[in-house]
Length: 153
Image (cartoon, rainbow, N blue to C red; front, side, top):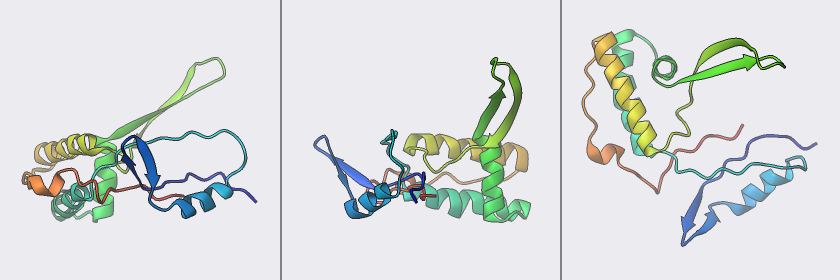
């Protein structure tokens, strides 16, 4: 039976054309989808270098200072520094409730990830008393050869 699951693929844009890194896997995933309309989104994910700095330096220092695991520190920082507001409304458009959730960092582009990391560093300094060193420019520069892509569900 067809499943309605997101499909994420790595690709390259060259001279205005999109080239999938693994076309056969993409086509196999498409075969599992139900018939009907879909949305396609193209974006440039942040680099693995940004992730290495964020997880290996920023979260490691926060984890050390708070006793949280890296995963717990990541969840806490997403909620604090990358909040996602979810609002539910009734049929008449009246707000029923609003919640603050932890926003995902997976799909942040390079600039957005840099801004997020800076918010985390500022939070760590002001609220946790944790001084996080500036990133090595080579560690967080755009690395188009090795993007961080979300995992398909």
